[in-house]
Length: 202
Length: 158
Image (cartoon, rainbow over all chains, first blue to last red; front, side):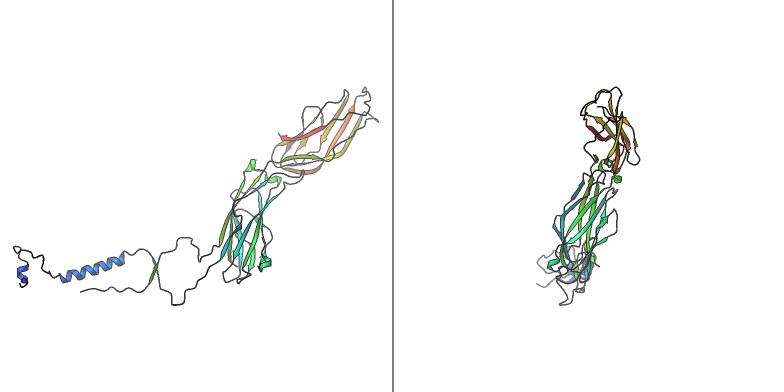
């Protein structure tokens, strides 16, 4: 049976042959595809688009390592007595040891700072390197006073960029001191320090 | 007719979170440290005993002993007392050199605590002189080997 003529296809009283292949409206199909494609590109998630690296350009680096070897939890320093006629006895804590691998490719250093709103008493710290024998090379700094809002202050300098010297360990000692003039916790409350240690390129 | 949409060959990666560290290593450590200071009020004397002999008169003075004091608070005082009274006619006076900013009073010691120094605040001083003066009334009989009493000096709140 020959397909219906074009004139016959659009007569409303003609029965619809569901088995016959109906040609598509050609202009409408192309427009739909184009619009869909535009919508697909328009609703892409917000992402950064970076070009693929060239072959062989990707390097596997571990980056710097910096963590607490021992301790690292909260340290509590309690000043409780004095020799009569003298200022109260200071107290110290040396339970914190840190590890570093300063793989920055340049000479590095470790800095320290603190935040302690309403600080009443004195707190000091010093880093004593414990890994000299394994080849650590660096320059220890003298004991540092920790005061609220201080700038990052060097606690260890001149960490070399290459192994084995760039890797080391050290004990962080905190020392609290309070003169009679600074009062006591019954009058002033305790001091609470948030200490930040940072390893950076020097 | 099909419309081909060509896009460049690119890799799409999510933006890093705010504050994310470069590389795989950690470069910052954080630690909490607290400092507390107890209320400290202590005093010590330089000698454990003092002897006063009134054989040459009715009065004798000794200022060979000193005291040391540490107070890290405000408004403290020193009080003094005897463990037992002397015989009738015999008395012991005491006077302490005060720390800076405090005031002292001359007292005849009894078994009741009396203020010796008042207005002590934030003091850490040593070698402050203690002056003892023993007195006997003219009618007092000799007491042989003497009478020993213990003087107690206490730091307390005003």
